[in-house]
Amino acid sequence: MSKVKKIIKSVIIEGFEAVKDSAKQIGETISPTGLLESAIGPKQKNNEFTDYLKGLGPLSEEQLNKKKKEYEDREKSDLEKARNILRPSIPDHMKLPQKPVESRPYEQVAQDEEQKKAMAVEAQKRGPTQPLAVPKSKPKGRLGQTSQKATTEGLKKDTRIG
Image (tube, rainbow, N blue to C red; front, side):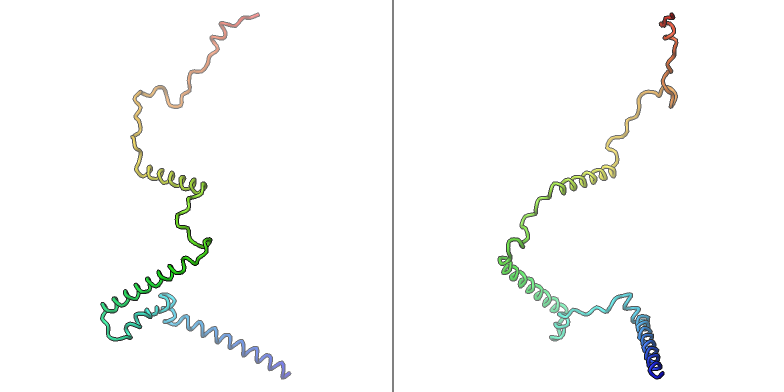
């Protein structure tokens, strides 16, 4: 019996600990700071380089901007040097093509269709180039009336009996 009691007791204690941990997590997400962080996002860290420059000593904003520009220019030149050194060592099959590759026939057809559609849309936006022609003759007859119906009078005169 004592083993059964210990097992039941350990199961209950572990269950309460799980509930306690989940309640703690819920409390953290519902806290005002947690809600603000979830709505706005976590605090953004300051730029490390700017912090470093500020730590150097009392520098004005102009001096800070000047140092940033110098640093950026130095970084760009270092990157360009590294690219120039690495470019010849890249195998031919991994190099980017220098000229733009001509489009394939089906791509060309798709581009032509897109251009035609664009032209049609432009034409619709501009409106008709010529106004519709106004009819010069007077309407004859009634709307929906068919032509004269065939009669059998001519057939009776020409037919022979016998």
